Image (cartoon, rainbow, N blue to C red; front, side, top):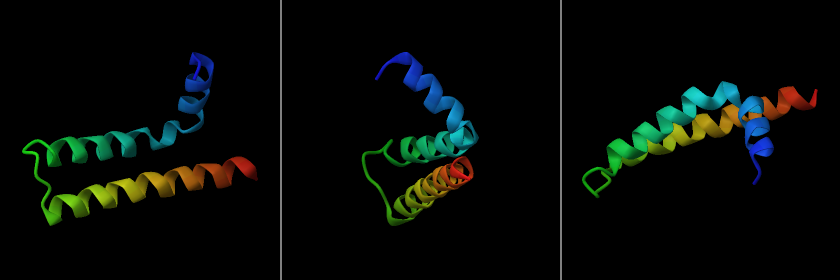
Length: 64
């Protein structure tokens, strides 16, 4: 992937950046002890689906 594609992707999905950062934080907090509890798993999955929905919304807006 070249730098222009990365920049284009970042601009297109910039609204999802806070959600992606939150997702990464959830993952890093959960795997720190190398064990994932059900509560941690639930938080990670929830954060992941928020990112997915935001990306889907961005795609819907972009195609109209």
